Length: 249
Figure 1 (cartoon, helix red, strand yellow):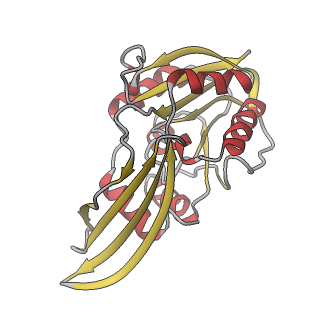
Figure 2 (cartoon, helix red, strand yellow):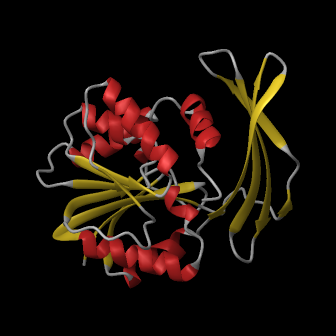
């Protein structure tokens, strides 16, 4: 992988230690009464998955980053939880069971940028669902995205041992593709010494609301609801994200 490696995982967990309360509440509203198994593709280090497991939700996860999965297992072990986790990419992983609900929060689906992979991933999600199953997927929209190469931006976090992880990134958004190509660098610094460095390349695809709704329909889904980020109101074209709630049509 070119992203979400060791330093990236450490930075992510320190930078985003808790699941967004609104997102978690929205998911719990949809999941608490579900009897069958639930799946979170692209589950990362468990920011969403672990609170759901603590709440007694029968959820499994998978991710393409072995470092993220290892961080998730360690966090679960501290809570006495044994998660069901798989490793692989959404567009190519093979799972042997069906799920009552599949959810992909926080815009993670945008990390799949190739049109054929997007199409194949949505079709795969459709196949994994039970006949009455539900898909909940959050995307980021093109609202607020500006064309061209951005200036370098940076921020840092502090580890428990006092070391700093400094992250620098520079994006380059191509509106004709609706894709932001990001170059990032992580530096681990302690007592003025550079201890480790990690480069990262990732791309994020953004959507128009009607565009993504059409992709869902082409994959066989019926859109039941489309909410603004965090699920508090109906999504509008002015929102920078949207949560689609779908069923098999």
